[in-house]
Picture 1 (tube, rainbow, N blue to C red):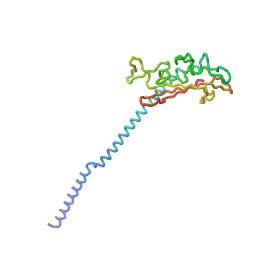
Picture 2: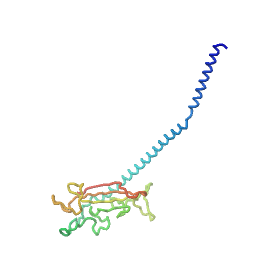
Picture 3: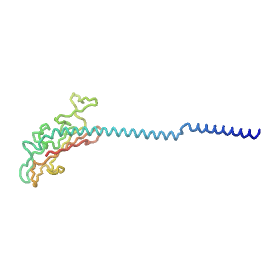
Picture 4: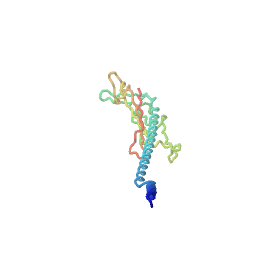
Length: 234
């Protein structure tokens, strides 16, 4: 064997070895290692958890928005019932009985004959009134004074065992009526307050009416405020 044959054979063997080495490396690179697979699973899991959390937040915000809209509807209905009423009783009014230190305020709140809110004929009658779950009166009520019925997801009205409509579950309306200063309606004063300069009689103060809607779900420990509406009766 001459020198040229030895060189040619060595070159062929070297090329064959390089090809076999390349194929070996290609085979090793064709799959994933356990570490790569675990890392991919971690990334995928984090993405799925983030998606689930965002969906949960979306549904929670959607429920809150729906509840806030329902609460404002209840506040508006009660305001519509009250906004045309005079500040105080149109017959007896608001006045002091007696003189001096023994004088007592008369006429604030419902009169003795007004045993139901259906007989309320002025705004101060509604001070402290509540309508709905755990309240003084059945409700919540609409502008006509009728209890608002619970509506099922299919659009039908919920009924009890006797076939009577059931009021909205967990909802209530609360009313607060306050006297405020004539030139500063953000400042409340006592119901028996008067003003000497400029003179303002006990029954001449503007009234601030605050209507609040509350909701208490099956898992709630206490009612939660969902909406509030305030208006001034000058």
